[in-house]
Length: 123
Image (cartoon, rainbow, N blue to C red; front, top):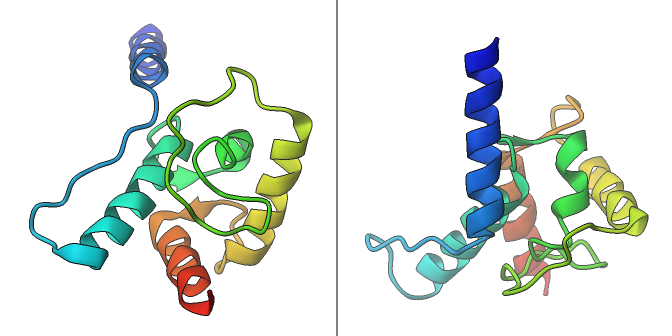
């Protein structure tokens, strides 16, 4: 139990220290590379505990990670506030309501990518 707690604290400290950064996919080209990199970077930014899901405890980070008020996906901002306001949680709840396809009250990487791709194609 202590080892697991220590590992969780180390991961959390690493994420906090490094912040949210974009990821480069050298195997892709042009717009697909940029869109995929942005979507993955946003997902990783919001998935603070690294469990491959954005769950209710992480909803407050969506705005900090580039999700706008209109629930559109965008690039991860360079700077973010240390402690997000309550309105950021409300934005996250709305995002789960429209993105969670399987009804498990969390957002998988696939659900996140599907929403971002759909939002981008309707613009």
